[in-house]
Image (cartoon, rainbow, N blue to C red):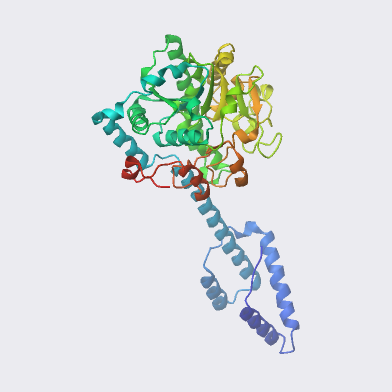
Amino acid sequence: MKFYISTKGIKRLKMSSTLAAGGGGGGGFWELSEELTRALVEANAEEAELEGLPASSFRELVKDMTSNRQDIKAFAFKIKAMVLNMERKVQSARRHESIFWHLASHGVPKSLHCLCLKLAEEYAVNAMARSRLPPPEFVSRLTDPSFHHVVLLTDNVLAASVAISSTIKSSFRPEKMVFHVVTDKKTYTPMHAWFALNPIKSAAMEVKGLHQYDWSHKVNLGVKEMLEIHHLIWSHKYHDLKEEDFEYVTGHERKLEILSPSCTSLMNHLRMYIPELFPDLKKVVFLDDDIVVQRDLSSLWEMDLNGKVVGAVVDSWCGLDCCPGRKYKDYFNFTNSIISSKLEYDRCGWLYGMNIFDLEAWRNSNITVTYHQWLNLNLNTGLGLWNPGALPPALIAFEDHVQPIDPLWHVAGLGYRFPKVDLQMLESAAAIHFSGPAKPWLEIGQAEVRRLWAIHVNFSNEFVSKCRITG
């Protein structure tokens, strides 16, 4: 701990010490300095004695010392108590700032809610907003394997628009692309209205609501079971979170991520059923809606996956076995013997969000069965095997079915208070992923990173303008 004394204060101390020494020079000053040093060291070493000391202001302290003529040791102890109290207040303020920031990231902005309402109204009154997607001349492309099929599962109209428009702008051959957007019943009408009123030139576009699927009884039961177990895992973790004295728990930012709506979102977990969603497709690129595409993706469809089901980034731009914040230890509970006996603590988890899936290989595998087996194992062993979210059980289910691809295909880690990615690497990335809580449509994100997303938003659009969506 450092203490600073002003020049004026030193002069006063020197004067006092000179008088105490009978005016004989500076010897008394150095004796006083040594005594003060000893007192401060003693106060620093005996923190237990600080408990119960009043955390007064400095002005009150000086008044008390001068009026009661307390010795220098008492002065040192009170100074130390004052500084410790100040440090506790600063630490508490920082914790609260972090907590409030994280909680703010889980809300739905009024502007996005407005956008959905306005588009739904437009769907009801404007025949153009109900135009067929895709137009009749493009319908055959929806199942044609010679085209490049892109899948998005989302209930965010603006995010879907950016992911798709950035992909089109970056594509060398947009006419080869077919976009399949799957959304929930609530978002279907605004999503359809947006893409009907803002058609994508040359590329084919399909918007489909979950209520429009006619799945088998077996698939319906599987989806229902999946959602129920994921919700129970979330509830279990949330209950534990409420039981903690959260303000003083280390690593609270990581724990707050369980409050994210994505942990229990149907659209987020439904990616495990992509083969059932698209029974006629053989190979697709899957994009999260918080992705921005910056490079042509064409070669992904031609990539040899060596018989694997999914092509995904495993290592990061920082090198082999380098994956900050996404090792298995960050997802799984290794204090449980089931996890510690099956998984590697320091193994890198692959990135969900921009993946190439061989759906034929997936259908010929036991991935979905394995996924459900582990969900039930987690349920039957107390719900504590992994943190809530879509990725942990997928890491297990896709074991031995992942083909690593170049890290520059997919750079994640954006959307955190302190970016977990080298900002200089972003320009080289084919796709950048706002995988953190601060999604780019929220105002809490870093401006220099948000602009990479905002450049793909048409702020002159009638509905965007009416709802006051800004960059």
